Length: 173
Figure 1: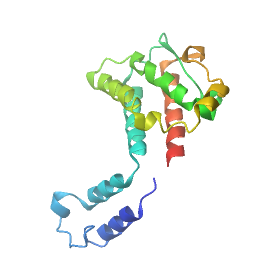
Figure 2 (figure 1 turned 60 degrees about the vertical axis):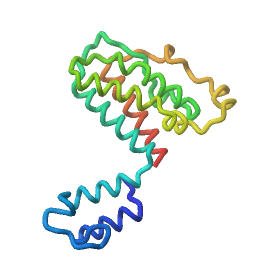
Figure 3 (figure 1 turned 180 degrees about the vertical axis):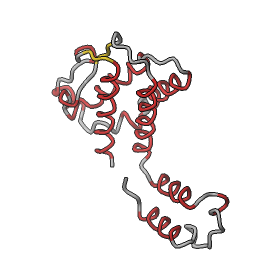
């Protein structure tokens, strides 16, 4: 993770026993927050909203991955990194998003995580940022439809989904 100059200064100040406004820190941290929390908040405030949203989605997807029922009978269409051309990332992401609610979970918190992933990836902030291609470039790329990708079981689906999100996230940083 890259920190902005402002966050680096805040971290340095915290290590020196000062809060980011250069005032002495009382024991236990500034206003009840430990110095590391103050630093983390400063760093997060500097992160791109796209990166924060993608990180949130990956975190929720990891929760789903660890808690979902590993049902081999549930098979979902899954783009792989090898399938993707740069101008097809948006359609691949939409393919994953459209099927995330089909993953087999029973826990209410995991169902909520599914909805978070589903809704966060619909935001224009994400949709508009995953492809810098012009409409004519997307058309000539001949991106596959979601139904044309191979079907895989749910753990592989989630892993492929996470891989795509990491690729998208790394291009944004």
